[in-house]
Image (cartoon, rainbow, N blue to C red):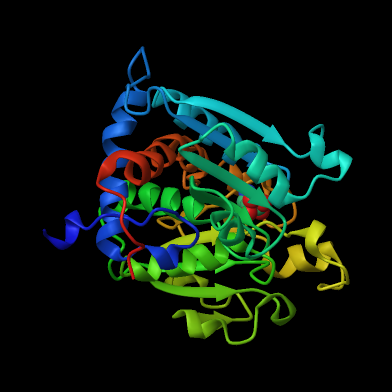
Length: 313
Ligand code: ASP
């Protein structure tokens, strides 16, 4: 068995679960599913007769809709549960909810919660494969995979590319997953933001840290994060206006050949100006589009790709 053929683990909790060949394998698979998404009938029978449960305890537009579409395009039966309006409102715990939904014998549970570490806990409560769709400030691995997919399509390879991740790194699961994924794929990553929003020892993840945009010119890719105001219980910046003055990416701050990314949803006029969002350098729409093919690939690789063995070290 070549490295490229190594099976994925049963769950996808963190980018740490994936080495470079596993990431490449998911992206190659996603390319073939992107072709399916271009057909008039966008379905393949890979998961016919199997059930995928989407369990979302936190707001989501892109991730929840793309996981739902991905599972449907693979012909799975899909049950989507949002905590609002479910028995969670009646006080049912996460564990009881997962065990209740496990009674339907799902092949996979896609879980989003505001609590770091919860996807790992869920994996201990169900025989299903568990996919982390965002657990608090911890990780959002499928976002990182779709970002690598989008960049690989544009740039061919991430090897040696310089990627700046800018903004509220402290509260961002996307930043954590993306630093890991981008560096694993050979990029040099710099995180940049006000010192109050850059975690101490972030360099341990393999990136550099900067407090100003002074050297932004060196970046091939400018990846901007949302200010996660819902996670802030104190003032991390004097005012959003001041933050925008120092860190907002506008078309004027972008060099002509730099690519611009953002995971969405964007706070227009805070971390990005309207002219940057609408500029031809922005890949934001491509990122959303990539979400379906990449999530189809993740479901396929975990549930069908190869015999399901232990996690890749
Ligand atoms: N949609 C991404 C997430 O769920 C990014 C964000 O919300 O800022 O983490």
